[in-house]
Length: 435
Ligand code: GAP
Image (cartoon, rainbow, N blue to C red; front, side, top):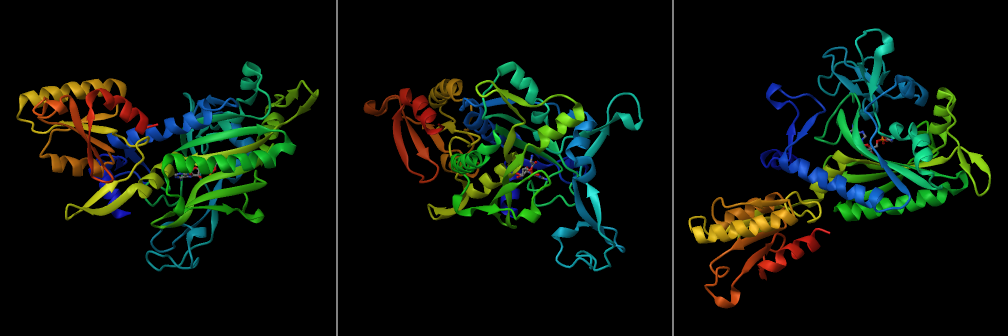
């Protein structure tokens, strides 16, 4: 984990939030390569689960919502974790994470009584300071979809089953943020609320379980390190009748990656009752009016990124040296190819390489120009950030060997082997690799 955190910082993937001020616990900032990887993951998810399906509608709800939303869902009263405080050093812990609930794991002092700590972050909206101005930063993106159920039905008249999908930030005042980007206070989620008839929930649940497995494969998470865990009835969230957690073997243990929950019609029914707005669904074919039930596949963006990076992190030997590389699938790699002249002090090579770079950049924008150091060093640097291909323009490209005119070397990150390809085939080669 330490090696990955160090690589992520050194190479511009992930920095500690507000670092120059000593940081802010539970927040991290994504650097140039981190945001590229994150955007690739989010775009892939959107393509697979929203644009790629006929039964899904995308949306983007506000982070700030009317406080009544969270009163209705039970979050104000019950979105809490058990907290204990050390009577000596005053440090706070999540008691369900402690083996010995009587002794402080830091200083050995006695722990005080357990109490429930609400994890919602609140803020004031508007120019007044009274309690009516209280609002919460959403702790899940899900509710933005439930409160827009009627809007989407009125605009699009979808037939059941259909779903809403959303990607966005969520906030939780975690008692002990930890393990890099695993447990954050500001996090991002990719969530789906899939509306079904009650008698169809088991089929839909199974369909989404399979789809979530297909996603793990697509994004490049090591399947040997994932587990499906059926949550015991006594441990289910208050809104759920069945939940499967998808867990991953992180270096700090097997822990949650994603969740798949059957939320019944809890949310729509509660919102309908509290808002007095009819949130039922009328099926013309049968003349039936019901409140749909919901299957919710929920994916953390940051945990996806962490699992993808951990799955990709590889050390091997190449040319008698140890090398570190990220074996990212080209479809998520932040840089798809690096283009460079064999020698940077030969203007004719540089000019040709610049022309190849400009041509590729138009069609596959995540391309990097790299002419620092010698070619061997460039390869190592690109390996470390997961660039699948390094394209080098040499004297043969210029026609020193006439048979190789306008061809370049393309080096494969994982094997280190090179092949020669005509410049005219490069765009298609890359586009096919990143599909
Ligand atoms: N709408 C359902 C829901 O929010 P959850 O299990 O509390 O369920 C869903 O969260 C996903 O969000 C988790 O599986 C995880 O990937 C991510 N997640 C939750 N809390 C997180 C945190 N503090 N830091 C990073 N990711 C988190």
